[in-house]
Image (cartoon, rainbow, N blue to C red; front, side):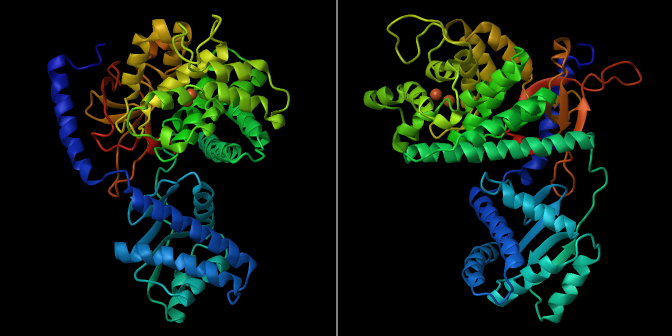
Length: 504
Ligand SMILES: [Fe+2]
Ligand SMILES: [Fe+2]
């Protein structure tokens, strides 16, 4: 490891990095949760308004109610924030200079708004004061009437608004930034787009399925199957894109997000095991539905902040069995391979069968069950929960799992899993010997270089926006030495780095 600084110097590098990162504390990457919710609501409202305005003319009464609702959302934001700027930078939306993360429900609206504004070369809309119905109508219809691909649209828009006596809205053109592509090729960008779509659509679909089952209604799981096939296609091409998505740990949508993450990890393990496409699809569906039995457990127990009492635990321990029963009754899944049902039944059994459900006769935990168990434990440990708000870092979680492997996990599968996410797992925040911070993006395909993954540098421009520059830690300089090396992993919360953002 001659590329790393000697220990004494390492300390200094660490210190100076910590010093320099202190500056970043004034530029947090995460937005206040309430503002984020209002922001998502706002984007959805604008999306619907743009859609409706393409169907009805501006005098239509059907529009009236929706405009009123939208005004309420917008004016609440304008009043609390003073003014309201919605701005596009690259593929992100910024609300008053802070990046808006999309919620599961908001995803389609985000994509719509970004695409429609970009086509019209609109980069920013600033609402300087509260709006009324006339102003909002005028704004939406003028926006929709702009010709696509016309660079002077923002100026035309402004002229029109002024002509109508509206001075509370400012429209700015789209900013194009140099080096937008960074180190990513166009093809990679396309794949990431598809991966994002599959990821969010799957979360939405699993949510729908769980809600339907809870309400004893018909649940259409065919869509889930189609999405599973798409995920398999994606992973066959490049496993790291979806693995990156699994670093998005959504606290509000735990159950759904968790199911999708577990399916991504399981899928990646299955691929390493050389499973066929059809087996992989079955594995994904099994992983997506592994906790479906929890739909029969009351919310209060699932979200209980404190420890469960004996009765509650007893019920909780039934979720694998209830899950297996539910899946057996999902006719739309078509022919169900028994290993799917068994995988769900098995996923908490543990290697020494010390888990649950309790068995009358000893048996081996099934392969699907063993895979899902690893994926499940890792995701649960690395996600904040109501009863454990500070989760383990990827590195800590793997260390715990390694310690428990003799009793709980399949050692070989765990080894594959660690090889998959690397000794520096995807999504870890790391300190480089150059003093820079980075987010692990993709492990090196050769296990010999496991300590030299590809890393996205944590760099921000003047606006606090990350630059997403990917560096390969196996690259050497003119002197033949490695340009950069990892000193240690850091806790992203301490440095206010929003890891998920680097994968969106
Ligand atoms: Fe479970
Ligand atoms: Fe689970």
